[in-house]
Image (cartoon, rainbow, N blue to C red):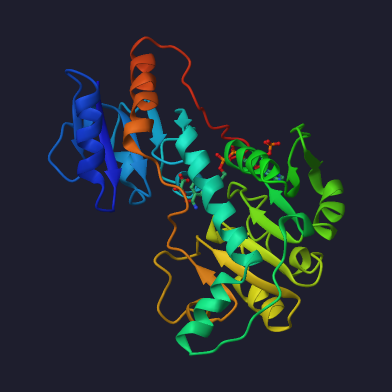
Length: 309
Ligand code: NDP
Ligand code: OXD
C-alpha cells in the first residue's frame, strides 16, 4: 500500500511531506519521481494531468485534495469503478464564508470603485447600502454554502438559498429544484454561486438566469468558471442590468491576458484563492481514509458518482 500525490502546482512537496509526516511508515511518492506503480493504492490529487490516474493498476481510491471533483469527472481515462473522496473541512468552509462576507461588504460600501477613483485622482462620494437593505441569495447549500448562509444571517443579512433537495437552515429562506429558482432569483440582490460543477450546473450563470435578478444585482462566483457564461455576464454588466461581479474562478486559470474581465471596471477578480485546503487541517481525514482502505471500511467524504459531487 502506498500513496501517490499528483498535482501540477508548486505544492506537491508540501503535500507529500505532510502526508509522510502524518503517518509513521507510510510510503508517499510524488508522481514526478520514480515509483512502483503497482504499490499505489491511493492517489491524492489536484488538477492532475489527464491520463495520469490510468497508470496505477491497483488503485483503490482517488482522493481530491479539494472540495471540488469536477476535474476528476472530466478525465475519461480515470479508473471508473473505485471510490472518489473529497475534502470536507471546517477551515475550507469558514475561509469561504469570510471571503464572501468581505466581498459583499466591499460591494455595499463601494470600496472597489473608490480604489479605481483613487488611481484616477477622483473624489466622488457615492451612496452606500446597508446590510438590512439587501438580500443575499446563495446557489448551493452544501458544506460551504450552508455555513456562508448561517454566517451572513449572524451579521443580520437577509439570506436565501437554493439547492437540489429541500433544506432547513435557521434564519434562511430556502428554495429547491427548478420550481424554486424563479422566486429565489427575483428576490436576490447579491447572488453567490457555491454549486459544484456538474453537467446539470454547467453554464447555469447565463443570460436567462442572470436576467431574472433585480436590476443592479451583484454576482459573486466562487464555485467554478464553468458555471458562468462570460459573455452573458459582460452583456448584462454593460447594459447596466447588473451593477458588478466578483469572480474567483475562471474557465481557464490563470485567466488569459487578453480576456475582457481583466480591464472591465465592473468586474473584480481574485485568483482562485477564496478558500484553499490547509494541509494541517485536511491531512488527517486523508490518512483516516487510507487506514480505512487497509481495513476495508467505508470511506469518509465519498463523492456520489451519479450526481457528480
Ligand atoms: P457540496 O457538495 O457540499 O454542496 C453542493 C450544494 O450544491 C448542495 O447544496 C447541492 O444540493 C447543490 N447542488 C448541486 N447540484 C445542484 C443542482 N443541479 N441544482 C441545485 N442545487 C444543486 O459542495 P461544497 O459546498 O463543499 O463546495 C461547493 C463548490 O465550491 C465545490 O464543488 C467547488 O467547486 C467550489 N469551491 C471553490 C473554492 C474556491 O476557492 N473558489 C474552494 C472550495 C470549493 P443538495 O444539498 O440538495 O445535494
Ligand atoms: C476546492 C477548490 O474545490 O479549491 O477545494 O476550489
